[in-house]
Amino acid sequence: MSRHHRSALLKRSAALLAATALIVAACSPAAVEETEDPPETDETDEAAGEVEETEPAEDDEPTAAGERGTIELLTTTEGYDPIRYEAAFMIADAWEELGFEVEVLPTEFSTLIESFYDEQDFQAAVVGWSGRVDRLDPQHFLGTLAGENTDLGGNNPGQYVNERYDELFAMQRAEGDQEQRREYVLEMQEVAAEDMAVNVLFYRDEVVGYNNTTFEGFTEMSGEALYNEWTPYTVTPLTDDRMLTIGTPEEPDTINPLDSTTVWGWKFMRMYYDKLVRLSEDAEPLPWAAESYEALDDTTFEIVLRDGMTFHDGEPVTVEDIKFTYDYFIDNEFGYFMPFLNMVDEVEIIDDSTVQFHLETPFGPFPNVTMAQIPILPEHIWAEIDNPQDLAPDDIPTVGSGPLQFEQYDLGEYKSLTVFEDHWTADDFEIDGVELIIYADSEGVFTGLQTGEIDMTAWRMEPGQINLAEDEDDITVVNAPDFGYYHLTFNTDVEPFNDPEVRKALSHAIDKNTIVDVLLDGRGEPGTSVIAPSNPFWHNPDVTRYDYDMDRAAQILEDAGY
Image (cartoon, rainbow, N blue to C red):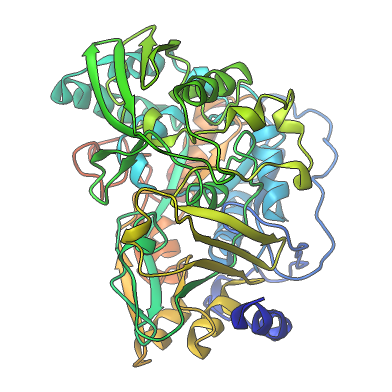
């Protein structure tokens, strides 16, 4: 156990007692029962502390058409994300002014994600999509509103379906000409905005920090800041400590590659799994496990496997592993990745080093999206697992072929990876590995950065911490633009959100400027579209907007018969 691991256990209880005190008092709900949650985490982590878990209320009697009934609004707990927590109460107050009864349900993060994606058991939820380098291509974010992704576990839990949107979605992914594809993407954003398919609340700046006395040479990336795939390659130790220590209040939902649906699962797993292609900090596809690849025609991609690769257990990586991996993901219908796999017709082994992907339809972003996201699994391990999504935590294989190899994961406490000396990039590292201390909340992470317990933060600092960090000589603050977004998703399959006029009215009742100016201290901007302004080529700045206007909101409801 490292010095960081030991001291983390001692400091965690102190971090739990630290007050977040980040939000202006005027925006806090007047008298709310605080609900915190037990430590388990996900895309970010969960709420801090042991608390009674909030269960969704039993369904009330169906609301008659035209009645302003009760709305249940899911959000994270305050300890997990005070911004989303406070924003939900601000939204609820405004909706109640319109005559709805609103019950805000602060929920432990992994429970929220399960209700949202796996069960689709919600009316409205304040959630978020993280920016990642592979998501600079618009395919992922556009897919969150595609009708083909509405199945349980899919990326469109709001059940939004629009025939024109789906037609454009198919057209843009098959289009090889970027300018023409851009026209389809711009129109899709307008279609979604006119329907108020989802309310993008805000884009938040990614403000993180690192200790400039322990390491230098961090890689900064849009959407990912410092916690990205390239930082372990580029950092140089300034002391004898060669383990890069990262602090995070987030924990994987699971480290099962056939079950993880959050960025925090994949940010960890992608360090020890290889993929055929890896994206540079500028989102350029770089051959990785594939020594080379080329498009033979619109529906055929050929890859040549890099020679001499081995898995962490010493077994060679073969073309059979490549074919098995893609077939296995497709056969198990893992909803999180199906939007990037459902165009694959066949994976064909040509010879001992060559594989061809035959697509049913053209898919222009295949290298940037599909080849850059699917982790290569060892067939000799996973072929024995018939129901991978049902694996118990202790039974999940952790053998990859990536540049770092899995060493340890203590739930709620600690994770570590070490450099895999047989990887073809091993000589590029100046560190021995990466360890992550999991804190109960962002306050604990910030304290760890101040005390030198960690070298960098994996998650953004809260507004109240940023000014303090900027006053510390040994902390460097990094502000990276984000192209992820926080959103209010309506379940369009249930009342009253199956009525677009209700969605529009309730959207006019959301004061996004105050959320950004007060809750975020101005470090972000109000949301408009699922493609952020920081991704200017694909962003449509002219979509229909729903500015804060309570009179307009009330009028829309009245005109719609409420």
